[in-house]
Image (cartoon, rainbow, N blue to C red; front, side):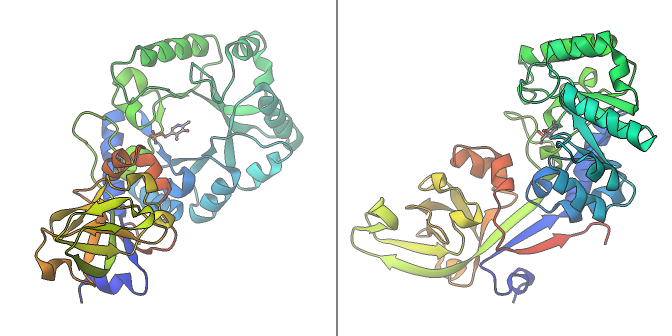
Length: 372
Ligand SMILES: *Cc1c(COP(=O)(O)O)cnc(C)c1O
């Protein structure tokens, strides 16, 4: 039995996550953005790969600033990481300021009410509390709007009790290096920050780091690139791959007469052909929209997905693969070096981000490397 087959155990599929590759990607982004500190984004359970093991590996590699989206994610990460700075991007939830301080979490303050609530909490505790303040520079999603920024400029005492402050903004088009929106957002952000109390700034997500030093600020916030997603679409991926997803071939069958495959009889085989049925489906995060478009790899051969992806199974065409290599019990690679998440995303009309964050929960999981 191969080590893959052994690690698979009773599961249909094996997800292997290379923590050393994630740490290597972080080092690479740190070097590229230096002297800015390279933070790490671990929201959505570390883009589906496990916020706790990924966070521990990144801390061991030297990362000290971690971003999550939700308060609950911050609380879970705090339990795994001792000393790190953890920022909750979605902001301060009403009435829950004490939950943030109890777990030493820093909210990204996204509107004047959140600033007031956090300052009030600091005053009640008789201490200063660190806070990120998000200034919307054109994303129009979260953060202080221009008129709210102007009011803060007019009365910076609203920030009393919040220290140290970090000014942050988020780019809408960073993965398009030539998009004028990037420079426009940077200019708007710089103009706002110039009028506010002096403090460190944070601008760049993964792709933003590749826009050059003007976008690095004092602290970068890469997520996707840590996990091997290409931060420079259209150009070669500078990041190392991190995930491998392999699933069992459950059955193979020969079809000799014209027949259809799968639900809806949507795919017609003109035969003769050999088909393999593999133990992953849309419940495992293989988007149904990749039906008839995606492919898997078996023993180094590409096998196109035929017919509709069902909940627990996909069917692939293995006619051209030597029979012993595509037999029941063999493993098919769904994601890996030849099939990065970006590629599956493209086949499914989505992006690698969504592929990773949709990965299912019933895989056997194996972590390679890392601190432990
Ligand atoms: C998700 C997120 C990031 C990370 O973005 P990537 O494109 O994954 O690097 C950074 N900042 C904010 C505010 C985010 O929401």
